[in-house]
Image (tube, rainbow, N blue to C red; front, side, top):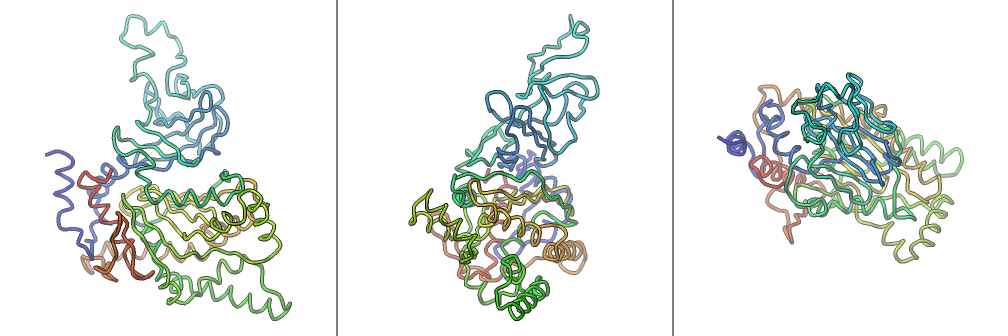
Length: 441
């Protein structure tokens, strides 16, 4: 029985149009198949080109269970290599990022490698005379990811030899990167080199499902939102002026459910999903007016208006990313086990934009997406509670019934009839089942 047949048999009967079996979140065997059929075959986010500006700059990440290195090589080329020395198997680096100098050098026996993975030098080379060792043998080199590509500076890698090219695979999810970059007067963003890393005690799919769940914000985060709203009112009463904008990042969670219901979700090919209904912040304070003037100088008034009113709030690049492009936020998903997930939380600068615009992104990063904020803590607690309940004997199914059968389908895109629809969950599990059966990639 081949891998595809085995996986098809394993998931048979677990995914319906309106519900999925709890084992999709709890089974070790299913998790192993997810790594093989989803993470090892689709495009996975590696990093941003601005993380590796100079020759020898590198950053490390995971594809499924594989430790990988993204590195800048000769003539500006970038490479994605397995983080493994072909001599005795040691990792070449255990740093999250750095500069390797002129070569990667193994700390165990000092084998040296060029940044394309080829062997540069080995100690005591005479010892290999009259053996079958050859420096040019692929088995003697650091193994490279079969496919690497970049879209608007965002680098992805795939462990599959064949499959759709990156832009085809991204399909409608390209809008996340277009929106983020277009908001820069120079059309580019630059990563802030440090990030938050959070290990969640829950399945990776629970995190993704939560990102476009428009019902939970005012319920889960209502208390934190009300506390911020109360302070806003106090500031207004005492000063007669509106509170600083960053208070609204939290008070927005008091938005009533009916307003979330007015948004729209959309499912795109390969499992990507989008929450539409522009919820950006365009106050008329001096910082915003300065930014808009810079944008108009770069793009003209009409194009600037198109950019700043783009109909995107949040995009999921399935299975590896959650992107909030209007606020330059990105979260990478790295599954560690059926009940454990690493998320990397990054944010970006809009190149050429005034410094206060970056500060807004930083404030959102710290107030909403960081592991120390109550917003993130609320979510992490719910994720853990879901995982605990799913591992119990309290029931077998997870419900995705809301507005099932009411979605609209046109030109390969599925749209919801309401912002509260569970379309994103159904759409992602449709892609999940396709991947697990050997398709979608």
